[in-house]
Structures are given as C-alpha cells and as structure tokens.
Length: 65
Image (cartoon, rainbow, N blue to C red; front, side, top):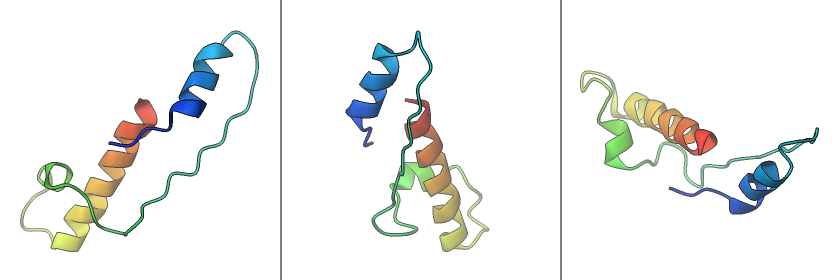
C-alpha cells in the first residue's frame, strides 16, 4: 500500500486551522490490483469487474489512512 506521507503530515500538523489539500491518486495500470483486493468480489463476475472493484477498495483504504 502506498500512502503519500507529506499530505498526511500536513493535515496532522494543521488540523487546528482551515486548509486545503488536494490529492490525485493514480493507478499506474488500470485494473491491476493485488489478489487480496480482488478476492472479496463474487467469482461469477468478470475478472475485469472484480479488479475494478478491488481498485476502488484499495483507493478507499489509502484515502482513509
């Protein structure tokens, strides 16, 4: 899992006053995710759909970090 430390530190250091942070997470290769993110989705789905949902799950996990 990749988490950019600079925005996270900035948010922690400035939590007591207003600020704006933008983050542009990118997927280097669409639909390429670890099996652990693909597995929770039903195997009846197309592999591409399970990978897509896995990418969203990975993004959500990283965003919550």
